[in-house]
Length: 383
Image 1 (cartoon, rainbow, N blue to C red):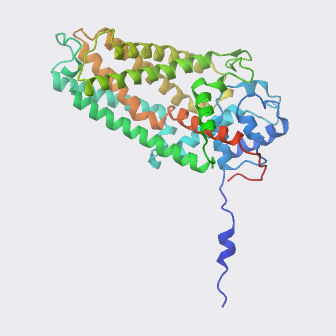
Image 2: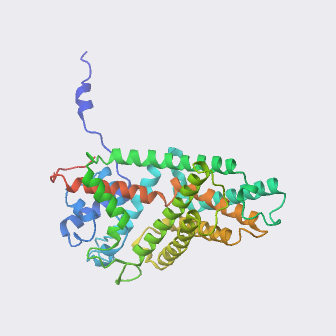
Image 3: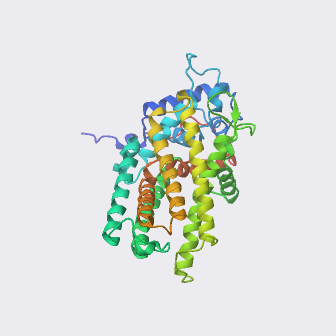
């Protein structure tokens, strides 16, 4: 009896099935590839033209390259109610949500993306409860005589550094593993210095929230506006200024031996104040745009995730600025416990919420920069 021929079976290409959302993006990209009216709008459409068919890796890459500005939806002649029903922003947003869940680490935590509003609410409740109980246990009261702004009289420095260091390290690890798996699957090719520099510049400048002609994107109607870009800038750089304030304070503490509290005119306080203002203005503006946004121009199922993340950023900045303003008051222990609880919730949910979109988008921008430097290979398939 002749043994079965396993060579032929082994040589067959691996078939990767698309989800319904991925198949819908593939269908719309085929239509867009024939039309090409929006070719100059953003990085998605030039990347699209380098493909004849769209496999899973292509679709996940293009979905994360999309900045959800809405310009193509407002310009499209095949948008609903046309029978082609082309709605690229909504189709891409749906796939992005699936991407975050698919590449989440640990994999079982991917479900947190699908219930992110509840996840954030529970994390916030847990964080607030934890620090309120700790403050009561360590201080005996949440309202007491002025401690001169000395936070460590309420929570020891070692305790705070250990708790937040562990949670933040886990968040970074989870995001790094997830985006590494994504990077490997989209087959990016060799990274060059020019490509990395261009991608970094595009990410930091939010180039593709400027629209095809630099006039901005479409929000509630057909008018172009740069508001979304400005609010994103305020949010991102506000966050980075707060991170810089924490980093400088860490250097003061460990390297120079300078202990908190620091004066209002010190570098950590000035950086934190500016960052807190940015984290008030930016998220408030993004929430305003999110509420006004046409529900057809996105995946409405992700609104709880979007708004929960914005709310956490707002609470972080508001509680931080309140703590700074009343750090010499008798209510400082209560304000400190609230602020630390909010920040803990933010750190704990970073790998499983809207924060992840920035990490995956930077990876997609890097692939786009690499790809533009390669000769076009119009081959069928993309898996």
